[in-house]
Length: 219
Ligand code: SAM
Image (cartoon, rainbow, N blue to C red; front, side):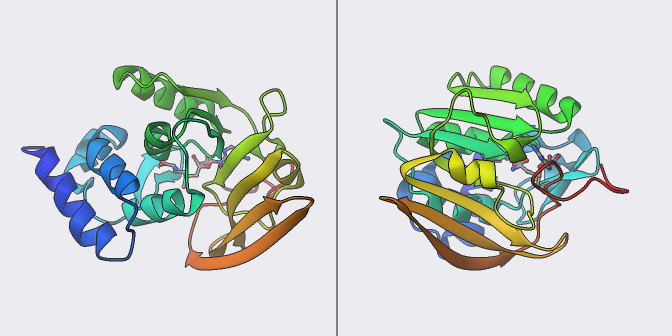
């Protein structure tokens, strides 16, 4: 990368802001986190385009616009929010969340990806993140409840344990649909009720696990 700062600035202006993401804190985080360090070396020159890229183990780093859009929907508070992320992948979304929340707990079912993401957090000096290799569909009961929960893989429906681990006033954002195409669904815990709202169409890799899809041919 000759000048990754310029490339990120352009990515934010042309691919994210122009498509409707307006929260200045989200845009600043997208400008700051070096996405090229989360992709494989031979793909670094594609890091600031608006596409998902392979990260190994048949998984992908999400498209920057989707990362920004999902982050904006969460309405994070950097001074107090405890966030659970399900599907660490490369750790890119994790690093964005870490800039905008107090604590981030992230679960990844493929140990090699989790270990790589842990190394990247260290490399970037990110200290408010804990990553574990585990089935995220059961949540992380030891540190629940969470103010925000973000699922970055496609579920048949929102995993029940995640709804149970959502604290008062909490928001859970999860792609719901089939194994290829989904719709982002936002759950908000308001008093004793949970409000459900369907948002954008998306295409994530499947959420595999006890409260997700059954693992088949894919990893
Ligand atoms: N947000 C990530 C990033 O920025 O690189 C991309 C996430 S990728 C689209 C989805 C990830 O979810 C994959 O790494 C996959 O292994 C993981 N995953 C799928 N099912 C899971 C589960 N039950 N628990 C934890 N991670 C899971």
